[in-house]
Amino acid sequence: MQRIATSNAVADMFGPGKYGFGAGNPAAGVRPTYFSADWCNQVQEEICALPEVLGIVIDGSSRNMLATAVLMLVQGMASSYAADTGAANSCVVTLSPGITVLTDGMVIRFKAKSNNTGPSTLTLNSLGAQPIYGLNSTALQGGEIRQNGYCTVLWNASIGGFILQSCNGGGLQIGNGTQSQHGATVGQVQSGAMIYASDGGAANAYVVNYSPGLTALTDGMVLWFKAKVANTGASTLTVNSLGAQPFVGASHSPLQGGEIVANGKCQVVWNAPLGAFVLIECTGGALQVGNATQSQHAVPLGQVQPIFGSAGSSSSRNKLINGGAQVVIQTSSPSLSTAPQYGPVEMIAGWASGGAITAGTLVQDTAAPVGRTGKAVRFQSCTLTGSGQMSWRYRMESGDAVNMKNQTATFQIKVQHNVGSAINYTVVIRKPTAADNFSSTTVIGTSAATSVASGVAQQLTFTQALGDCSYGLEIEVQAACGAVTTKDFWWTEWSIEEGAAASNIEFRPIPVELAACMRYYQADTFHCGGAPIASGTGSTAVSSNSTSIQGTKTLSVPMRAQPTLATKDLAGNSGAYSFFPPSGGQTNNQQMTSGGVGLSTTTIDLDATASVAAITWCRFTYTLSARL
Image: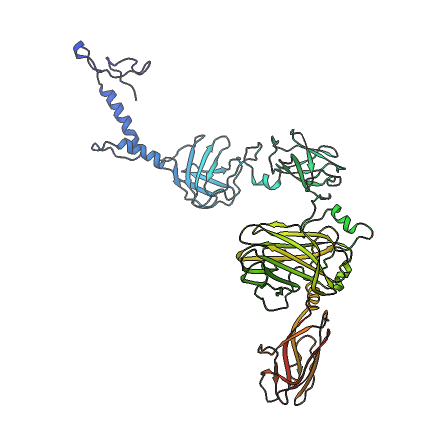
């Protein structure tokens, strides 16, 4: 192409040497710039060349052929895109018009036919298979090219291969990062190479240089290093050239010595609010922890020593029974009342006060939101008016309480409630005025109120000097809830132990807890006579005559005191018996014409005359209560 160059072209019209057309001036005798056939032909062919190279036939009736050609180039990039027709790891792309030579920097795009599983090649038109490298200029490893992914490659003449710049859905191979803003490879991340180095300092003054070098300490930054020597006291850590920073343990206190050992692998985290590195761990070193406040917390030596570490220190074992709310003997779940009553979780009574009760049930929750085991006493769906209060109660008999006479003890329990605002919980410890007779009690101590937010599991603790508690102990936990509607309360992991600190709650084996609970409440079946064979723990099959029947059952666990008996026949009729006469068939809702059941703390004795002649056996279910 050339600019107009006829004899009267306007010189330098668009700059030096850039001639143009003049309109002329007839009045002054100046002619317009002359055309020439040569110039017109050059312009015509220059314009037609682009549509024709794209396969467009010149049509004199169309005035947008050049625009169409440009649009084809922009939209389709027809000269650098095609679909792959090869196999996995051997891509084949045929461009149209065909490429006859590979030019340094040439960019090609293609749609992959298959996933690659390792090193791969690309054959472009008939130019032979050429290796495909990643952005780190090494062979592909697999997964960089994905089926139906759109791939962009660049020919690098210096290394004689295509560089895969991207493929949507595929892994991106890059070089190892060496600066803080660089991308990191999986290998770098997995090896921890960027956050691990060896200490080059001295005891109590650790110096670690990471590569790439750290230029700032960021809150929450985690670093690892191999310690050169052990620490003997308070220590510092210098990272790269960022200055010596103090070291603290997990309790946010200065190190004391022995937390870092020679050749130990140390993990630290920068805590900006503290302005210090927190030592998370050092293999082989002692671990600093804060004081324990929950049952599963680690206990520092300083917290344990006052309880166990000196001569004459008292036991810290749990003196309360069924602390994990796991033992259930009573099958009924009573409705909430203003009078204390026992629910299915043994040893615990509950009630409400301060308002009218319209709904609520005492149950065992086996999926409670509080506590380790998920089991808890639950006051379920409670509705209460006025200045309502929920109460949880545990009573300890004199035989156990005397062991805590004149001791300081710490009570703990975990609680939670839902719905509404925070409420105050208070612990009250009392003692009866006569052994195991709680009809009259004296307050030993009352805790301060603890506010517990809704939906939050919280441990309550109360330390109290018990004085002479030989007659027994009563522990009540009060929840000042006010008026509530369909609200739940949970109570679990209760314990009382000697000493002024709450240690981990003791979870005793279920058989041990069950036996302890059965001292206060039992439920089973009594059977005597012929077939079927004896059923129920301790039952004894004995012979019977036409109307008289006798049998004795020895209780597997002696009761605390002479129990109260409640019986039902096998059909659930209270105070009745089920008989089986020789003629067959079970007869329910029967009574004895004389005699009956005798009780002691260790046995149930049946000596009676049946109302049915010639019975073969007698059977009934029973509960025995010696609850306080």
